[in-house]
Image (cartoon, rainbow, N blue to C red; front, side, top):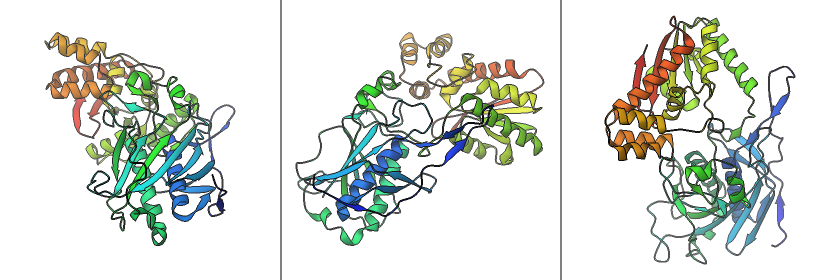
Length: 422
């Protein structure tokens, strides 16, 4: 690799720490996701390809449109390919991918006789060594595609489109002809540039993400059980990794419930996160913002604390996986501590008279999303209702007879499947 001139732009500070409440009031440091790491490496590689300068830091646009500075560990040029590496920093969150190297290569090509005729400018996203490939249904990306979740895909496309626009005057290389050496034969997926991107006609990139040692890291995750083979997943919904502490999260829930009560809310709407909260707000537009409390996996704790705070009514806004675990009596629902067991769901289907073969499919479904897809395809809304009623009954057992309960079950696209009350 030739000696590269360093790009001095963007020397900014580190990710600020996040305070954790508790007895020691220890401060836990935030980190960034593998999706952010991959995006930063892709931007650095593209910038190197466009300008000949090797960036030390790049600013990544996160899903909330804020920019986060990410240090670049290494970069270089090999023939028509530019590459860059980022060391994933999980902060103080315990994660097997902490300090893993995420290496991204970027090449350009034209659609035409030599290459597949893609309909619109965009990115051919390739699963390099150490990045998993999806082999089972029920995940948010298709079978045979790289295990790069939708949000990181969007981040990569948006940030690369911005980088291309920023250096448009020096972009002569994309018209040089077919991709040298041909397209990669590794598993891939097509990602279009954002609709708002302009001036990218004829621009096609091949972006390959590699994680050295990723296959071994994946053995310590849920990936093999979910049918993600060959490496880790590239994840992230916000781009930021917040340190996880049970006590800190419990205190956060208590604080949110206290704020809701102090603002006169008599009903607490318990959501599992930002996505379920957004869907619940659409169903309950008259509810004040203070009433919405994100409880993550702390189902029973949140119910007990809400009752202790004197709320007259509780609303659960959840997805199907949480429903199944709540119905089974799990007070805490995190995937790493409470494995998903779809056997009881299959039993409910059997009691409704569904064929043994169908019940077997439910029991062996890859994920809760997969099981829900099977139930909906079979028109088995009665089974969905049964498991939802069981979950509501478990909540009622914790809340007691004096607290009103409501359960909103959403599918993964936000459609309201069940609205049950007690």
